Structures are given as C-alpha cells and as structure tokens.
Image (cartoon, rainbow, N blue to C red; front, side):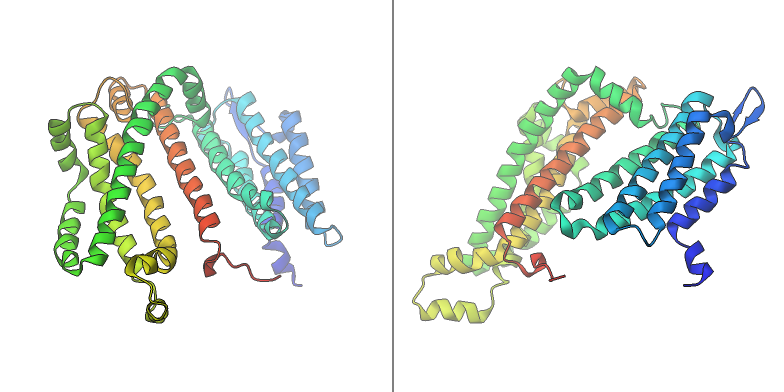
Length: 378
C-alpha cells in the first residue's frame, strides 16, 4: 500500500485538515482571531474525534468496532463545531480553520456512512440507519452554514428556527394538515388512482378505447396546474372538493399508463398457458396479469403520492378557506414569517416522504417475488 493511497483515504483527509485547522482561526471576536485552544471543550472534542478516527482506521480493529469508532468520531467532531459557533458567535468567512475542519468532517461523515452501508447486510436496522444519518447530516450542514455565516432568517432560516416554529404553531399546522392532506389529498388520491385503474381495465378489454382515451388523457395531463386550479375552484367551490378535483386530474393519467404497461407485461406464453386451462379473460386477469402488473401499479401509486400533495398545495393558492398548507404558505410569505412557511414545507415534505415510504414497504410485501428484490448470497 503506497503513501498516496493512505493519504487520500477520507479518514486521513479528515485528520490532515483537522491538524491544519489548529493553525488557523476558528472565530473572530472583538476583532481578535481565536483558535481551537481558546475553546477548551470544543478542543477536547476535536482531539477525541482525531483519536477515534485513528483507531477506526487501524487494521487491527474489527469491522464493527472500527465503524463504531468512526461514527463516534463524527459525532464528537460535529459537536465541536456547534460548540464553537454557539460560544464565539457568527464569524462568516473569517473563521478559516472552522470551515476547513467542517470540510474534513464531511470526509469523515462520508467514511462513516460508507462503513455503515457495508454492515447493512447484517441488520435491517443498520440499513434504515444509513438514510436517517444522511438526512441528519444534511440538516447539520444547514444549521452550521446558516448560523456560521449569519444568514438572515428571511432568506433561509436554520433548522433550529424551523423546529421552534413547528413547536410554537402546532395547532395551526395540524389544522392545515387536516384540511390539505386528510380532506383534499386522500380523497383526490383515492378517486384519481381508482378511476385510472378502472379505466385501464376497460381500455385493455375494449381495444378501440385505447386509441381514443390515451391521446385525450395525454392532452389533459399536459395542462398546467395553474390553469386547472382556478377552473376547479369555480366549478366546485373554495373548499376541499376543488382541490380533490385537481388531484384526480393529476393522478389519473399516471395510473392509467402504468396499469396498461403492467397488463401488457404478461408474456404470450403465460397467456397461452391460461387459454389451455380454459381460463376466462377475468380469470387470466386476476391470477396472472394483475400480479405481473403489481410493480407498475405501485410505481404509479408512489409517483401519485407526491403529485397529489403538490397539486393540493398549489391549488390552495387560487382559493381556499382560511386554512390549508397552500393558504398558510401564501399568507405567511406576505407577512414575512418565513419560519412558519418553512415549517409548513417541512410538514408537507415529511407527510409526502412517509406516504412514499409506506407504499414502498407495502410494495415490498406484495411483490416480494419480483427479481429486483432477490438478494445475492454473500
């Protein structure tokens, strides 16, 4: 193993950048440059992170212990940065050593998540831990950059401010969530996906409908939301019914196209086999073609889970009662309450991600037989 290969390892890069950061200022207070030694607790955390990183890089350390050391090193290093920012204030680009250390911390976090990914085959909990830690790392960078560079909250609030806004406006956000997600999204999602599925069965059964409905569905799906939403508000009123109508239009065509593609995925050999058993059209559909179409159906359901939420929020910009996520965003932007706007966005993003995740888990349990889920032997 050459010296270059050792130096270019992510953990080695972290150690080198950490040592260099000791020679540079990490904060500027009252016009005076401060280094790591003036922040005793942060300096101790830095030394601990270096020690754990070196231990984790050693060949004599086992795979599990090495991964644990690197993860703990990243935690100590991350806390040291937060401690410096909290004690010395916001110093922007003048804190050269601090940002050099943050870059090194990025390499350390990269190495930690890579090592956790290598252990994911041993435990399902570790497999879930990797994306969770990646999300935490993104939030951490967001917090460090917004506070370290003193970015005004009007432009971009920190995750801490967004969290405080969520805690301080729980009742408002809960009412908005109920109006947008429970009333509009769920009803429109069920109607849109259900009608798309039923029409796909009819198109498959009656071939001439495919030539007439598919071009029409493609035309309707190409209409922008900002053009549909005001019309639906005029037709169905300002309450959730108009938003559900927008969602039905948005989710109908993806379900129709994916269902037809899934039904056509059954090979001629399978169809001929069912004919040899004297199976009817609906028996072939129920026992062969629909099971083969399940990956396509879940693909449409997952796509529509995000489209429905986007459609409901955008539709609420054009008319809604004094409640709803879209109403909250448009109103609070005018009041310059950007933290509440971001809190609403965070709730919407979390709801969309959970919906997608639930559908992904359900897909795994229904289509476990699919080749994409077969795990190679290690």
